Length: 232
Image (tube, rainbow, N blue to C red; front, side, top):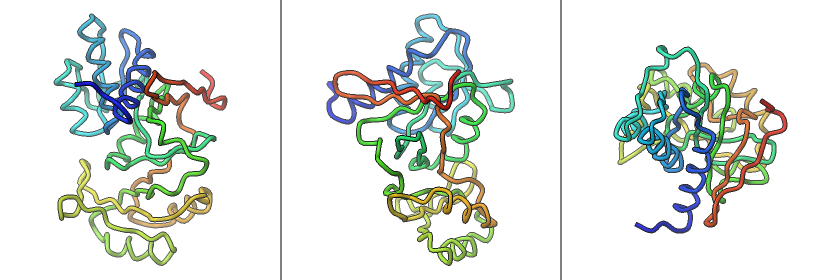
């Protein structure tokens, strides 16, 4: 099948990020339609003889990785992660991103935080002047979630409990997600401070200055932007 438009951009981003994968690495594999192509590239490298292990940020990612010949390990069974590759929902020029549209933000943040190196991959529509238009996900406990949602609403954060196929969406961790409908430019410091004070929130979709570089796919290839604040 011939790809075009955003699908081609996503593939080009994922495959470009694959150039940073080295034999013997333990990878952190992200979740979503762009990360999918990075997984395919890693699978191709395994077929070429690379010895790779991976930690998956979702059950779906683990399934795709195994189908492509990649050994998937539990996070508790690895000493470190060499390289994490994942997509974003929005990212600004200061490398502050919103992630979690696919519902895997908790695991994605743990993996990104533990990785020696992080690459965010994306199509051309993801970079923005200021984040905030994309709803900010927060993973919340099921226990007492109505009270958590009320507190978020009282703080003016406009939470909406995520649903899928007419049912409340449940993460791979067994939790719920509240999507906060805010606006750009997001007052990142203020929002982060408010969220830090809410009992019941397990993790937020604010991924602030966590990546070493971004890879933006185009229909002609991909462009790499290094983060000057994260020099190796």
